[in-house]
Image 1 (cartoon, rainbow, N blue to C red):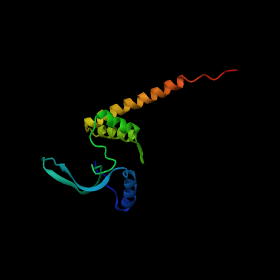
Image 2: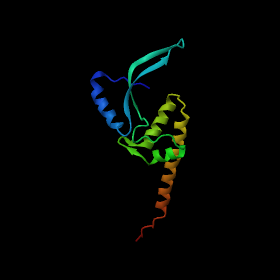
Image 3: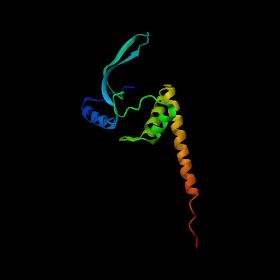
Image 4: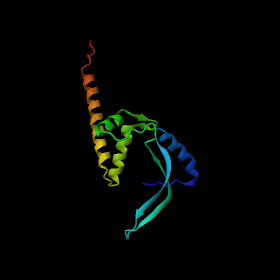
Length: 135
């Protein structure tokens, strides 16, 4: 997905994105391609900005077991909010675009299970509290 940012909003948008992505992403310029009606590759955007986490980044976690990645996401909170929220919004956006990314789907499912379990445990803990005395 590519967004067009009007020239007068570029500085403000970059400041926002640089702050939001400061926890592990670097800026890159890429060419965006698509396939036209005849099946030919065409350049859609010659210079698009992309934020990506590279292995050199100190916060890059690298490949790992899906459950470990899900636990990390479930426990983490960045400058833009909970990582759970980011993941679930990503999964919803991809689904809305009819994009099937099984890794994201599986992570979202595991993280949702973890969140539901945490809520259930909190509710169980609350039900074990002593009842206040009534007059």
